[in-house]
Length: 432
Image 1 (cartoon, one colour):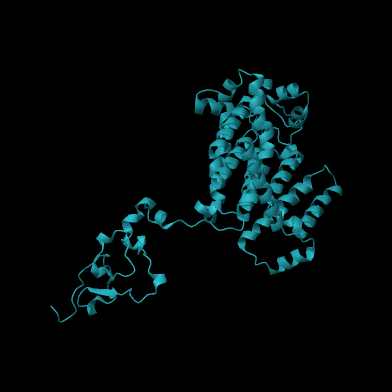
Image 2: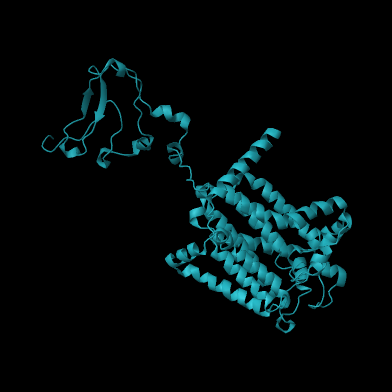
């Protein structure tokens, strides 16, 4: 076991060294400016207009930090984009940063702009669609062991695993796959936060505390079942964090479920060997969101569906199939001729000719490309007697597997003759 761990650690270290060597280490903004001048702009580049418009709106309504301190944000952003060393990380991460500024600044939206908060819709839909309030059933029995089991994916894995996914894609897969992860993960969370802002719904913890009484935006959030983790660890981290969350009524859709789903989809697609484990983790997190009273089942289902839709919407054809396994700067392994023609390599001997000695005469069946000018099958005799003693070694003539596939279905009229000792070629004109 220790040997396997050492080998895995050595592999990661070596991959990290190679990945660092691939980085652009230039600090000159002139390099970025030169690249920008040479860049051929396309319609796809117009997405940056959305980034700029989104950032401008949230900076305008933001008052913590206030003016002029909040101008530091766009200044720093411009600087990291100008330096090649940092721009290679921050430019692909723009969708993620767009989501983060949207999530943080949503607290500054004036109350008069906000829609009404739905308190009864989600529990009602849960009962109608699933026959019961599933989240309520899952919270009736609690135990410290279950609390820890739910806390690990919900309170720890949710915030750390996205970095691990990005790191593994950077180390072991192509640059395009890492950029795809940044785009998909960022836009998925951005879309989820926008839905939560436009369609605010209360979580199960609200129903347990306040019942179905109307909610308002002055109410603080609650850590739900994570308060038991605070008591267990002797901290108030989750109580403080959820009480001051920018989006208090963001139960629908569950972005915890969405993030776990997109992580599982990426890992199972680009690292198929992890499929079983990542989906077990995802299933545990689905349960944890309801056990900790943060989401209804319908929230979990909607988050998972949203993530699945984003994954297949953003996944390009160039990263499907074997192309998903291409290492950094490498090429995908080509399939062997046996895989191409769906043959068992063990049957290859059936297509091989028998051994012949070097001093025997070998009959090689010959067919003229123009069957109209060939009067009969011709056997061409190749003499081996003139070869040197060093070349008089037995050898094997192997027919191409590709040329033998379904040979019995072809005919001479198709320009095909099976490899055999003798065969008949249609006679030339005038020999009938």
